[in-house]
Image (cartoon, one colour):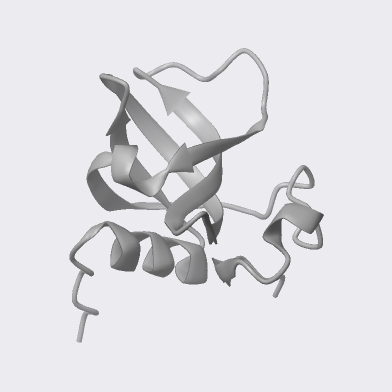
Length: 107
């Protein structure tokens, strides 16, 4: 039995974080593959901090944890590609305190 694919941006990101699977999305007219590490709220809006795996089919020049407004991520879909937690992700960072909805967990 296969798990049903989540529908909607937030459930898709939640599933990706829990399963540690990358997502494909469009952002600022670019095609991205992201490894989402955390989804949290700030000023009533949802944000995702993720490592960009590819942008328009090419890897970024440097690995960094970027912040994406969930409303800005279009055409969001789970991929079959898994990811490991990146050491750049600091779950104890002050900006996440009391705001975290779901974050990757080691294990």
